[in-house]
Amino acid sequence: MKRVLEENLIYEILSVVEEIPKGSVATYGQIARLIGRDKNARLVGKVLSMAEYYGEYPCHRVVNHAGRLAPGWIEQGDLLRNEGIPLKDETHVDLKKCQWQFCL
DNA sequence: TCCATGACATCAA
DNA sequence: ATTGATGCCATGG
Image (cartoon, rainbow, N blue to C red; front, side, top):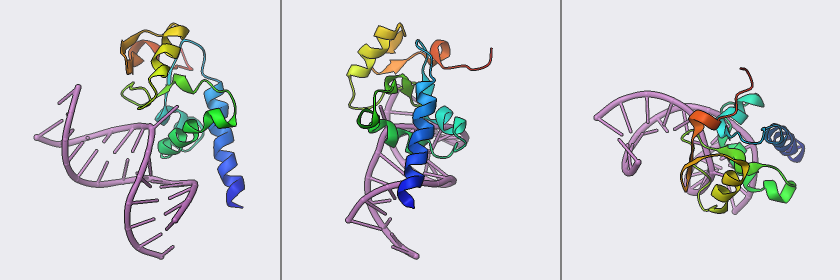
């Protein structure tokens, strides 16, 4: 059923989001790639927009490829600073320093 | 099935 | 940095 497929996406996405270490940020494309759907970055965003509805996830650690935070969500900047992530602007993080790296 | 939308990604100016 | 165009794909009407 359609419903099941939808929940699968949500489950995979949220699983990855939950794995983002504190002090790091990930991009939508990055997450999409991790769940095997590198073309579905938009879906990631859609799910995260409802992430609070599904549970408590560090959705504030997810930004777009330019490091820009979610439009219309000003608090995200404060949350990130609270995590110790340096912000370039009120709406941008420093991906150079804080992007989530699995391999090092 | 077609059309519009979206917390996106890439590339070209 | 900003704008425009293109791709990509699930979702909803």
